[in-house]
Image 1 (cartoon, rainbow, N blue to C red):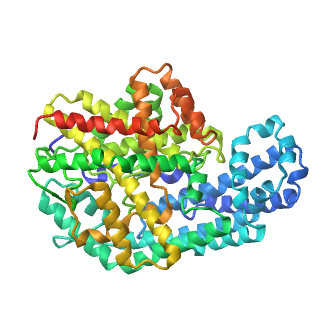
Image 2 (image 1 turned 90 degrees about the vertical axis):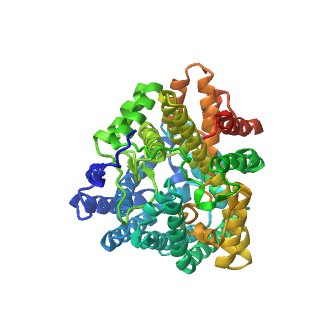
Image 3 (image 1 turned 135 degrees about the vertical axis):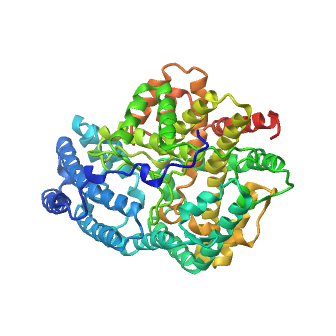
Length: 596
């Protein structure tokens, strides 16, 4: 770390998307769209109405051809998504991305028959086909596709829903993204982006945090009508589709996609909520004591400790820290992560119009992932880099599984990312000799865990209430604010002052819009990794090999299969208690340390 200011924005790396296409008007991009469309028509002509009569080996060949078509289409879609994430305020990029979505959707409509017809094959007949060695290679994908069979609609309805998606959910999501990208926040006379405004909520100066918080609230409140409309429309859209598909709860579709039982998710949510008092309530009471206050203002949640020295990491220091931590665990992990830096697979500078969050996009198995983040030089940004590189390493290792089976369910996708964070945190803590900075690092890690576990479960509860109430009618902005405040008070505890300016803050959370009920996956992943890391520290035999085998499996195994080699079982209630005990242990350590 250094006391110097952050490096200039132009010194931070930007990604090179040329490995996908050289530009929106690239000849190769148009050629892929045309080829995929032509191949889809040939594919439909050859296979429609024939799947049940194919031999197992011929069905495997059909799946392979289907995967090749998807690889082309998803490559184009990935390029459009990444281009838009880099500048969501550019209308030309928005137009290009919408056009790409429409053309890809049209082509996918041609191949839609394939998965629908696959689910029409009788179980006994499919069992005969599955004896073929070639088809066994696709067995996990076939099983995942068949899991949707009870919720599949008629072929015509499925095609209608697919074709209308670009003018339905996707269009509302785009409206949200562009609204947030265009929004500016008045910070002492300067108009700032969402990313910069959120960054100032962790500024050492309390007045700076308050100004940013009030500005955030003011702008979100001024857009409350459109944000409420988007939220209500998407919730109603989901309710209608869930009803037609006979899902029994708003979370059921997500749980099925995540390949996790509803009872397991319920156990996780209950375990975290039951320990709010020993987790967030206890930690933030301790933080208030450090600040010499009876209560904290809501904009103090991510405030650095009073004796934090304001040191920042340069980009090179952040890179070195993460790679050293990864290499200390397994050299192969650092070697893969190094490619993201050397081959420009990372976009780090904050800039107007850029997506304000962070992600690692897997693109397609025939290419490689890309990472987006907004680097301000704080310890939290180093943890974000470690998190996204964990995703990236996972995606590289799983890519040989192919486009159909490389991606993992959300719950397991967070495993490698949170594990990468833990490795980096433990390395930074071990290398820090100053007692004060150790406490700051430990408090920072606890706060990250609060954000990953407690905050995400509170988000889950907010979503659950919204989606459970939506069938009774449209929720007003005031009602959305009430649900938000209630779930936040429950999770964060009585130590916080929540005034009216906190009420609109539900409005900027993108997961509510893009991926309903995504958020519990963060808590799932954090608790899972805490249990996994404790097994690693206890000297579990061949841990590194088993860990890499787990990552290489991609989406071919469920959580029970993946955790069995480590003697862990997420269906056991004690599993979640073990994971949460890691967090309470860190808080115990902080309570024993000398007060700032």
